[in-house]
Every structure is written in structure tokens, then in C-alpha cells.
Amino acid sequence: MNNDNPSIIVPVAAHLRPLKQDERVQRGDFVQGENQEFKPWEGLSGFRADTYVEQIYRRRAPAPAKVKRTP
Image (cartoon, rainbow, N blue to C red; front, side, top):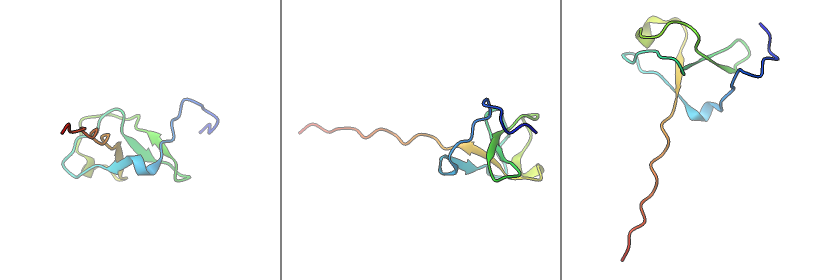
């Protein structure tokens, strides 16, 4: 594998969460590579996460913006 490929995104692990058993894998999910880096999932999508050998990760949803209350 060519590790010099700039198209591979390496997100921060704090921004990822493991998929639950009953969640479906989709494009945009991540798997952990050999060197502990995260790389985009490039396989098929639509299957349950618990049927795959390795843990699959997804980006966490952004935190909701705080609403300013007026007095």
C-alpha cells in the first residue's frame, strides 16, 4: 500500500465513534489500518457492523450550538 497518497484522510480518533452492532456500514465510515491510522471504508455498504471482523468507526455528530437566551 502506498502511504504517500494525500487523498487518504486521517481523522483524529476523538472525532470517531465505533458503530453499534445493529448499525449498517456506509460510505464515509472508517476502519483502523495496520499502523493504527484510520482510513476510509472502501468496501461494500449496507451490511451490519457486527458481521465484519474489524471494528468500523463513524464520525461523531457535531455538538448542537448553544442557544443564547434573551432576558
